[in-house]
Image (cartoon, rainbow, N blue to C red):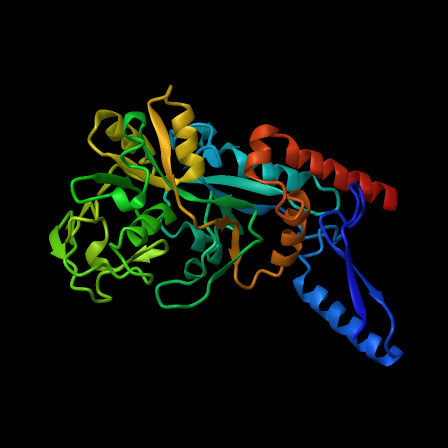
Length: 369
């Protein structure tokens, strides 16, 4: 086999961020050709979707839905659903979509409509009202299927990273600096059918990896209290729940080393959760890092993120499973995010970062024409 040397490219090199493999050819031509062919095949599989694909993605306007209550990632200019500004899209994902529209030759234009209901929002492109839906939706295989198991939607390339966290009152940060410290005398607020809820339940042992509730968990619902028996009749995941736990109001743990879980408010329940945390009615909020850090920075020091989940998740948009535009849109998203090297943190630093990438695309396209 030939000797191999790995060279790291200098700054500014067109292969930025990649190693260059150089061969000293001391074996037969046939052996080297076989080796090079194998490496090219590996690179072809590992390479991301072409970021500079000139393909036009769509003819006509796409109906794009966005979740209305996930500031600063995706939210409405006015929370009032009867307001004309309710369908005005703001936030990180709003700027990303605007940059997609600005890319010359991409053919992407979006008619945006706010969506107030979170439950099963990811499945909406399977129906007639929406072509594409976003709003801080974590990419999960379980969210591509309906309750019968039929695959209805697919996700675009992940464009934002999420980590789950616990927001607590600042004077409780040291006492509650680990999920392991959440005991039955503590009350943690969560939003139903979110990854924040599911990861909290997983990390504290209230559910297993499949979302099956631990035997003995008591669930308060509008119709009364039920008790999980450890079977698949009692399931909570980020994609949904079984009927007996729908509309849940509170989970009571069966043992002392698991917390109580409290559900407050409607789809825009972050407001109620933050008010309850400030009043001491709950001890923590289990939610994504972005939302919790934003709440902490707006609290004048009252709240702080005390715990971060080790697991990293990606968020994306959904389209119908048979939508042939998905790959093309992926390529454009990968260009705007520079293959995931530009994301939420860079947008916070410079909200115009995606539009700058779109202008760079347009300059390239103009030079090539």
